[in-house]
Length: 140
Image 1: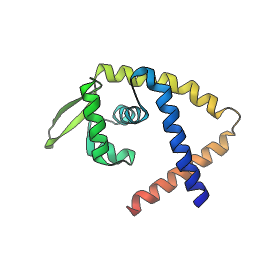
Image 2: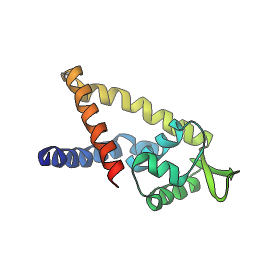
Image 3: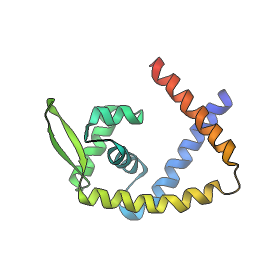
């Protein structure tokens, strides 16, 4: 298990560096891309705390990124009918375009990265990582 955890830590660092490089020409970082993805894939606009929870990150870090992206017109804050201070975060047209452009870059990159790897092994690795994530979420 320790070997797996250390490998995931190393992989995470390399994925973040590769992601930064992949989307840098779009004015994004891996962190911004990740938050854009959480917003884009949410069923409806969510408060920062909910976005952070869905990504397994702390609210303060996501809030900082949302604030920066708001300044760059990638996201907007909308009134939350259920909470006066916890605004809902939504993509602007510029944010939608940036996320779509990042996704277009990601697909061939991911296909190249996966080339030669067995699909069943990738699926098994994904299941194990998701199961470990769920266990960790329950223990926190």
